[in-house]
Amino acid sequence: MTERVVFEQVRVIDPVTGTDEVRDVAVADGVLAAETPSGAERIDARSLVLTAGLVDLHTHLREPGDEHKETVASGTRAAAAGGYTAVAAMANTDPPTDNAAIVQAVRDLAAAAGSCDVFPIGAITRGLDGEALAEMGEMVDAGVRIFSDDGRSVPTARLLRNALQYAKAFPVEVVLAEHAEDASLVEGGQMHEGARSASLGLAGRPAEAEEVIVARDLAITRSCGGRLHLCHLSSARSVELVRRAKAEGVRVTAEVTPHHLVGTDDDLVTYDTMKKMNPPLRTAEDRDALRAGLADGTIDVIATDHAPHAVEDKDREFDLAPPGTIGLETALAVVMTHLVEPGLLPLMRAIEALTSGPARILGTADHGGPLEPGRPANLVVFDPAAEWTVEAPFASKARNSAFLGERLRGRVRFTMLRGAFTVADGKPTR
Ligand code: DOR
Image (cartoon, rainbow, N blue to C red; front, side):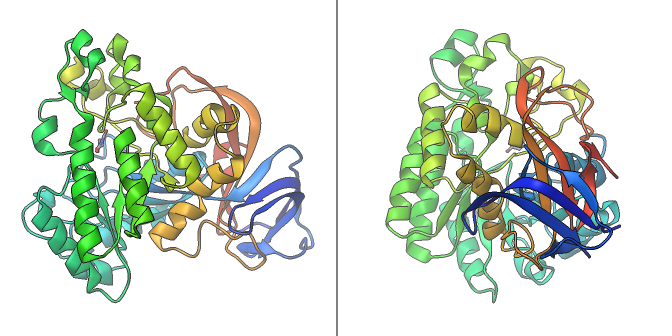
């Protein structure tokens, strides 16, 4: 049901227009309204912040195949709870999203659930096997705009070049999103390779595993053209490689996760499997370079890499536990608490990296603002001062959060998808 509502005296932040002002924001008939409609519900929103709904370029919804970990319905409810109105769903499902039928099935499940728009990402290689290209054309016809074998890298430079050349031939622009970790260097690795992995006796995943793929992919994109997106950057040298490539005009974008912006390999001293993820948390120098890269725009967006796992899978020996942390319900508060509040990232830039930045890469005009009359009412209203503790239950089926037990500031109060509440008074409506 679409609402007639006015958020009174809310702080509106819109990076598309550069707006940061306190005013009333009215919604009617699914869109932002120029004037308060008659009979509108009035919500006192003084001290709250209103922005475009958040957009995540990197969500694992696990359906089809691993519905015990997450479903499209539970994952999109988690997204709404975190303030998201659009997520791009990774292709490493079972079976993988490597054809138009699965793309449509995921989209239908999302439409039926009604919590958040889902943009399925297509696999680059058939079955994610790293050998032959998937039916990318068929998926483009079905509306796919991002392709990725996330979970692992495109294994060879030649295959990446073929994929970029194939992608360039489509009448619409598509993006290849790379999970940059060289398989030969991370085999068996459990955490960042360095002094800490040595002291803990865990096999390492070195920063070079990421850097060689980033360098390779930038070289290929530089020579053959096309659009490259680098997922979850984790190493300082990767940031520097992207900075230089951008200066040369290579068409590359990059993302960083909230956990890589906050955590380091020192967090693993308790062998906490919640902090095990690929790529791994690295050193404080790496984390600081990621923060600087995000602030100066070298890294375009913040993406969650929301990776739900079953309790029994994470509750095992460190080297047997699967990598990944959920992130949709904590991303905004982690960014507010650890970056915006301490003055490391301006609020406007944080919101850009969570909304209009990812919407642009996704190629959707309906999300990410601008917040102007007539535009779809896809928005979030949050309380920047509200404190809460990260704990189960989550709206997600999973509870494997790297931030479990942390006190955070910043709480979603309302999320609207095309003018309908998906979160009201802090609670998912669906
Ligand atoms: O930590 C991770 N988990 N990294 C990935 O690349 C994949 C993801 C997953 O699917 O669980």
